[in-house]
Length: 114
Length: 113
Image (tube, rainbow over the protein chains, first blue to last red):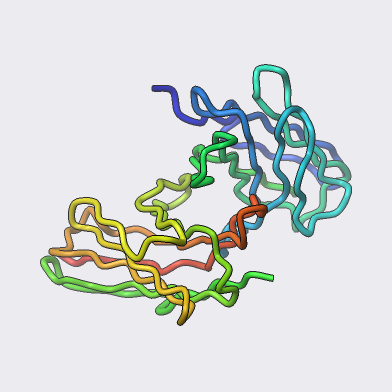
C-alpha cells in the first residue's frame, strides 16, 4: 500500500526566489493538506485541497498557493521566499467522507532559504 | 480557535518504565484527537486516533485517553524501550466541519538503556 510521498527531500533556495513542492497522497485518498513545521515547533496548517479546490486555509500569506490535480496529487508553491520560510513542509492525505478525518503524513520536504 | 499544549516539553526515563504524556486543548468541541510520533528530521507517524464519542484507544503498548470535559488527553506508554525515543505530538480539530489539525509543540522522549 503506497503511503504519502513528497519530493524533493531537501531544497536550498535564495531569498526572493520561488519554490514548488510536490505531494502524492496515500492510495485511495482524495484530500491533501499542507503543513509547515519550523524547528522545535508543531506543524502549522497551511491549506487543504479537495476536488481540485482550496477549501480551508490557515493563517498564511498569499505568497503560499497550491494546486490539486485530477489524480489527487498536489503542489505547494511559495513565492518571494523569506528566510523565515525555512522549515519542514509536510503533506497529509485523507479520504473525504471518512468520518474520522484521520490524516496520514508524508516524510516532508526540508526547505532552506539563504 | 483551538490551542493545544503539551507538557512536559522533554522527558527522560530508564528503559522498562511506564510513562504518561499529557496534552491539553482549549476547545471542547474537538472532533477527534490524534497522537503522532516524529523521529528527528522525519515526517509524522500516526499512533492513535480518538473520536469525540470515544474515551480511549489502545494499540500494543500504547493507550490514549480523551476527556473532552476537562480538555485533556493522555498517551500512556507501557514498558518503554529505547526505540520509543522520539518526539510525540498530539493534534486535534474543532468540529466536524474543520479539516485543520492544530498541533502542540510535542514532548521529546528519551528512553535510556
